[in-house]
Length: 391
Ligand SMILES: [Mg+2]
Image (cartoon, rainbow, N blue to C red; front, side, top):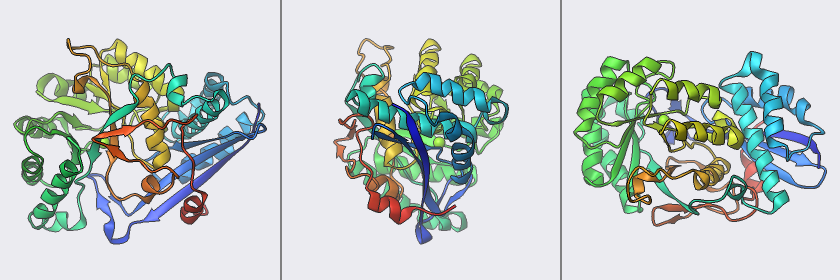
């Protein structure tokens, strides 16, 4: 079997008045960069590259740098091809855009492998420890009016937080970092009251703070029984992470802005994290994230992957989560907190909800791992065409 073509599809959905904000940026649109790998056997594979910045740069990496390397190669040689791609871009692409491009291709290659061997990707990764994954809701972002008058939006925030519990979730991740600390704490207080004291609450700062401010807000958040504090400081500040992990009584999580086993090794060596969150479409795809998992287990750091993107990214993350080794830190290995969770972004995103022919349905608070070969998904070409943009 030989690779005959690699195509990129940039999809964008303008949000108009539904735009939302994190501490770092606004989201005026939802977008995804999909990768399609075609072979001479008739088998094709889909992947998704990168999920934070614009899609055009990783698309250029795929089309101009990586595609010429892979045409004519055997798509089943996933490790060989990963090494070929990485060693070819080492001098100019060791992090971010270059690795995002590799990630999307790698996911597509595993999709082809699954279809070739007639197995779900999770089975090819060594088997499923679990065939359904506990989902946590990601929501309660800022709306535009929060910045002008956050108090006026507290009732809507309360309703949104409660809606996730009503939908069956018992774990919720929310944003802080855009407002003054006192104002963000007031938002967290409203959310905690809305979801009740037993629900898991995770707080994502998107690296809004310096160490001093992060420690200050972390001490306050300890009183709200927060499970993890995500990206309290910038990804480069390894000493800051280590300091917060040592001093706060709250799990420190990060990893969505780190790339390859070489990047993650630094986080582990410097004892920065309690929970590591690689994103499959950014950190290196299945081939590399399974290596990062091996590192994380050797350093006894829990892996709960980050996921942000279309239904393709969500399906891929479900296969990864199915394959992750459970922690055995307690006498009860199936204790919920020893198991990985899947991040289920609940912000508006038609690319998550309508791009695949099979919709994701919550089963209680779990998402099922797709059962078919490869990723186990089918792209709805009508939806693909509807949201495709020229670039
Ligand atoms: Mg985050």
